[in-house]
Amino acid sequence: MSGLVAARPRPPQRNQKKPPVAPRATDAEVAAVLANVAELCGPATTLPQRYREAYGVPLDARALGFGKLGSLLAVGERRGLFAVERTARREDGTSGSWCLRPVGAEITENTSDGESVGLLGFYHYARPPWNENARDATAAWLRALCAQYGLGGRVRVATEGVNATVSGSSDGLGAFQATLSSTEGWGRVLFKREPCTPQQLWPALSCWTADELCGFGADEATRSRLDAVGPGILLEPRAFRERMMEKDAVLVDVRNAYETNIGAFPGALDPKTRTFADFRTWLQKDETRSALNGKDVLMYCTGGVRCERATAALRAAMPEQKDRVFHLKGGIVSYMDEGLEGFAGANYVFDRRNRHGAAPRGSDQVLGKCLACRKPWDTYRGSATCAKCKVRVLLCDACLSSRDHEALVCELCAA
Image (tube, rainbow, N blue to C red):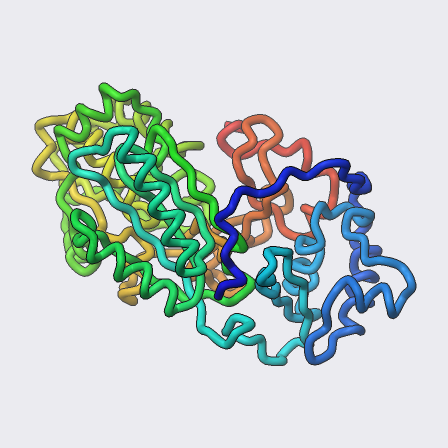
């Protein structure tokens, strides 16, 4: 896994002469190019070299209106024309290549050196919070550990603690987890291991410092007050499932609207937030307080980190509720890994898988809908955002290929 190490600063890119992205090609033109690509598929076809050799011109995704080659190939893969695999970065740090295989051909679940791979997610609230020197030292330590074990990913470090998802070889992830677990103060951290394919690995490491662990929009004084109040009662997934069935229980989804659009617990209160910072405003509303008053409040989010802040905020805002506020340990990820029923649709995740536990295409279990044509759809694309607030929106392949979507606004802005 040494080929995945990329923790060093990225060198500046100068004098780039990339061609401008062309207006989006018609669906028929894109289909014709993808058909040519599919014709080239062999045991391990590497692009774009093979395309140039076959047709005498480069495979220029930007000329078709796609900013990156990977975006174009993803369309072909979803249409069932071929299977795509992104090779790992080479040992010299340069980028790997796109490899295509015929549909049905086995795509290796291992990295180039034969190792199995996976994802590791975790968060850690420091009690008491670190000072800035300790925060910066922790960030440097985690960068060094990720480099040592060949891990890529995203690691956010604040005085509050750490929120991270890293990927790499199973051996590297195991060694990384063992090192953290044996470090003083980290022994109670919940680590969540998830499978992934080599193309879903993070190609590099991004480790940065921030004021907050999960963007709650609180100043230092407010964060100190929430730390003093503390989070709600932590429930294991099975205990959470049992309590949510009781008549005095009310579920609260702490995630953002673009996440709840593709999956949620039916009947949960949905604050319809664009960002987590909007949750504080929702808590102050009279209708929110009325809905929560006198109830067992069960909060949940993707992996648990946002609920630590959200439950503390509720306990601070409604002291009379402080002993009736609960949250799901490990979030939806742990709940689904337990095989428990009750969560409908797909769980949006902040890694290269995009969504977790997704229903098959065309299934009635797909809850999301394309903003333009309203067909069932639950996969977000990076270029699909609201024309007004820039929040992520759902657009199917056909609608994303049309420039008509650029004026669309999300449901929150349209309301």
